[in-house]
Amino acid sequence: MSENQATLNIDGKTIDLPVHSGTIGPDVIDVRKLYAQTGAFTYDPGFTSTASCDSAITYIDGDEGVLLHRGYPIGQLAENSSFMEVSYLLLNGELPSQAELDDFSRTITRHTMVHEQLSSFYSGFRRDAHPMAVMCGVVGALSAFYHDSTDIADPVLRKISSHRLIAKIPTIAAMAYKYSVGQPFVYPDNRLSYTGNFLRMTFAVPAEEYHVVPEVEKALDRIFILHADHEQNASTSTVRLAGSSGANPFACMAAGIACLWGPAHGGANEAALNMLREIGTPDRIQHYIDRAKDKNDPFRLMGFGHRVYKNYDPRATVMQSTVREVFQALNVTDPLFETALRLEEIALSDPYFVEKKLFPNVDFYSGIILSAIGFPTTMFTVLFALARTVGWVAQWNEMIADPGQKIGRPRQLYTGPTPRDYVPLAQR
Image 1 (tube, rainbow, N blue to C red):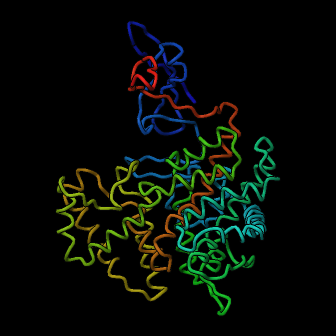
Image 2 (image 1 turned 90 degrees about the vertical axis):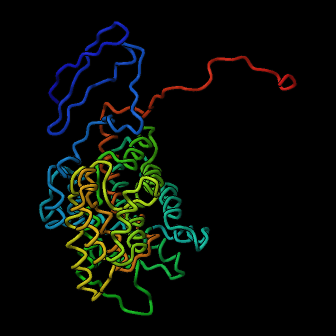
Image 3 (image 1 turned 30 degrees about the vertical axis):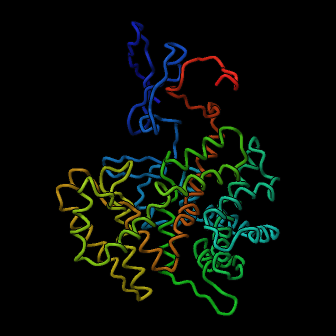
């Protein structure tokens, strides 16, 4: 990192703060010694102007609509790569050779089975429990079954834990779905791809032969790629914060899943699909657009705009073409897709949305695809967690290997009572 200086004047005192430059992206002002030198903290609710770490994994330029994984544009990866290849890239920093990819895929495949006692763990949940509630519990419990790889100081064990998590999350997710619908668990089939195996574990039943539809497999694999990592978002920051305490990787991933469950984070595609269902047909779109413009109306256009992207979400472009591929392969016609296309067209030509830079994001189309494949809306965030696990694992590994990492400890602006004396209960 190259370095300049920033000068800060506070209470008549002048101090110089280092300014670091990364390979691309905004410069950052290093305030680590600010409190020691001035007695003041920075104030940044939501940490939207704070770099919590330095990372070489994912880069986002929200103004330009850019998303890079290890330098590779997300569009190129989604069109040409596979989720296993992107997983290797995120974990190792470079795209694999064919031999490296084959070896990595074999390793993940060998870890897809879960401990048989873990299967009985599911029976402790109610059948109508939300699958994300089950995921939080089961993933957190992995440390009780695989405690032989929880020594985070050992890089070999960290690698084993990383592989176990990436491999077992699809099995755990499929089992959560099967349990919710009262069907028997389906064991992994090592002859299938990572994504094909997940589809089979989710939708196969013992009474019938199951065949993976190639177009559906490709579409879901693409969705996994598009959700694999997204820099220091809420759930990734949660994983890093939990990991900074020295917590085992399974506990850290459970923390990430819990954070992702929030409707403002992982539930956005479900909200977008529900909105399209509420709108119904293209002739009703203008009414809802007018409602969205009305500050006194609680209705909001879900699937438009993004916390980071102030341009077209690069992932949404891939999703739009993927919808048609899936519908064609499954011979599905869904009026919601036509409504979505028309809504996008109208919104993008409306000065109100253009000025506010409310462009479609990845959630706008992904819910339609997942619904067409057969996933209920309760599984949408589970699929998000499945894909994001590889990003969480990569970020966790990077943090643990960083010699400068410290336990996370945000500060606050205190606004409570000033010191006061205790009053005995009888005198109150």
